Each structure stands twice: as C-alpha cells, then as structure tokens.
Amino acid sequence: MSTHAAGTFEIESWEEEPYDEREGAKLTRTRLTKTFRGDVEGESTAELLMAYAAEEGSAAYVGFERVVGCVHGRSGSFVLHHTASSGGEPSASWSVVPGSATGELRGLRGEARIINEPDGGHSFALDYDLA
Image (cartoon, rainbow, N blue to C red; front, top):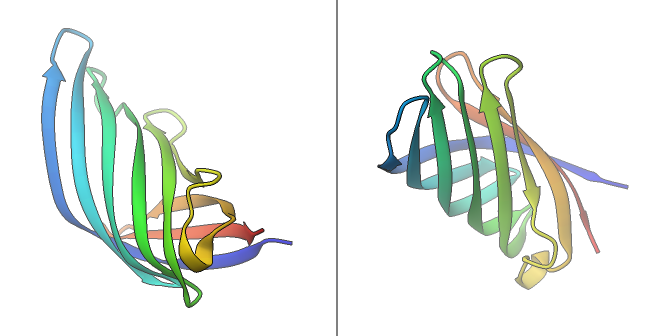
C-alpha cells in the first residue's frame, strides 16, 4: 500500500545554457537547485535537458535530481527521474530511481505529480513505498 506525501518546492537557482539553437527548437542544459517543504523537507540539485520548440508554448524536458532531506521524518537521499512536456496536453512527473535511496529512505520507490500553481508556485504529490 502506498503512502502519500505532499508539499511545495521553491526553485532557488536556475542556470540555463543553450547547446543547439537551430531552426525548429532550442536545446538547453539546465542546472537548478530547489528547497522542499511539507511532507518532504530538504534541498536538491537537478540537471535537465530541455527543448523549446519554435511553436509558442511547446517545450519538453528530461532530467535527474538528487533530493537530500527527510520524507515523513525519515532522513536520507534519493534520485528522481523527470519527464515533462507542454503544448497540447501538458504533463509533468517524477519517478524515484530504484535503488538510489540512502539512509532511512533505503528501498524508496514512487511516482509524483508536479502541479504548477496559478500564482507561479509549485507543489507536488508523491505516492511511495518503502521496501
């Protein structure tokens, strides 16, 4: 049975570097840091590969993020795999990379949904299991 965790995150830094800007789409490599609050407390560093299509509002990214902190009071770290797209039917999700968790979070598995709030903030809902 899965446990539900929810909270917010704030992007603390965003460093984006284009590496291919040909016709059709701009490709970038982005490094960012976040602070998590709620059922997940901690900090993270992420590396994302992003594609901004020439069509207004269409974009996608994939990446990995290491979160160091606590989930419902259990401390450790884990890695998230990101996938997202916008334009058409937008979607954004995270999944815990199996075997990546440390400390009291060892065995963590799960999936999360990312919610972009109307005020510009970000929240998430994580459904997870601890083996």
